[in-house]
Length: 321
Ligand code: GLU
Image (tube, rainbow, N blue to C red):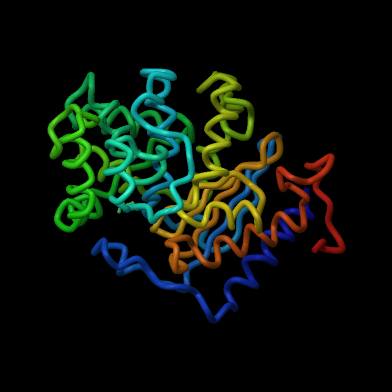
């Protein structure tokens, strides 16, 4: 589909020229070093075709996008029992907020805020030591992508271990409520290493294929999760995937997506495409400023919004409002 390649290239050219690029997350030491001029994009469609442009082959820290994969693993381990320990509502607060935990008895609002992902890491540790849990997580992601070269950036993880005081507070607070079962250092070590997963846009888009394809990895034909579970993960991405700007992302892009403070966004057009964008500058809510703008453009050209009547087919030419 040459048209889509053209659209992706046009979007990348537009983003390269943008002067307002947002602010790099500098609270994690290694992220502060990333060049704000970088921009990459990759789209993988349901037929397996790939459309890439810009810095699509540069690896970046996926950060909170990893929460999609750790949630998928935890659901595979404990199934719906997970929902006794983590909610499914947008939080309306920042990704690292502690206030709700007090009134809600240590049960995080959803698995995509830090507190929720820390509980998910605790679940993944129930059967393993951190080293094995992290290795298993990495194996899972490598399988999704079909790429054994994917690694965790241990420098990034160490940086967070040294500076992640809020996460330490969240984990201890939930431990006090009995919602973190393993020792806090182990849980956080696992969580930080998941966040420090390094991938490029193409790899990230490939990793998201099972969510595009009803739970099946189209490359292997193997089921990763049931179709119902894939739908539910997408529902959580739509409602909770962009911190307290999730409503706004649904409003302006209309796709389930998950962002990370490394500047990446994984967005899924169910049945049509898995999309990854990366631009390290963030908006005031911690989401990639140009990444989101690029997705708005893409959806306008393709009609991939999940709210599009009759939705889906790629339509090019006149862009829609
Ligand atoms: N590891 C980061 C933290 O816990 C993740 C932040 C994010 O991407 O939302 O602060």
